[in-house]
Length: 194
Image 1 (cartoon, rainbow, N blue to C red):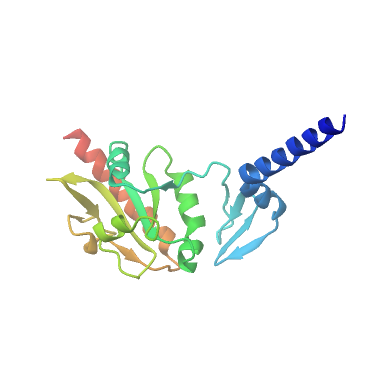
Image 2 (cartoon, helix red, strand yellow):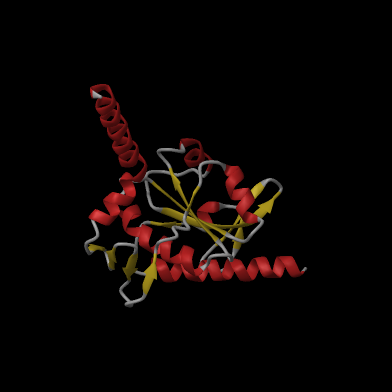
């Protein structure tokens, strides 16, 4: 009888550990369900309200975490790929996350919104020539001769990423990102029809 009780306590302890490890992030989110301010964005639970009082449900996080170029290539078949390069402890990158989440919801099925952590994927940081200026964002619209093709905020197509990148966090980032993504979608639609 005593052996059975010890066995049940051990199983219960293992179950608690398993649940804590597998559900930890979800529990932290539920337990930390209080409003917090990030720049001009107010979050609570799985929704946020931006400075225009637009509320977006974030239950389905649609931001793709890129760790390999092949992922970008795969998503390019579906549409343009917006990429933000940064790292988890970067404050401007953290402040940009709600903007990316909103874009991911708004452009779902039309464009891919992606994040590359330059500390977790240093090879990609080197490939895209990322310096310490983060966040560093750009939109890829295709490939040509094995190289990526980018689009600038003026709608110019370029194979030089430095001509199409947006560095840092600004008040108008969301509008700039939407403009570039819209231009990229139009560009890809033109390319498909020719």
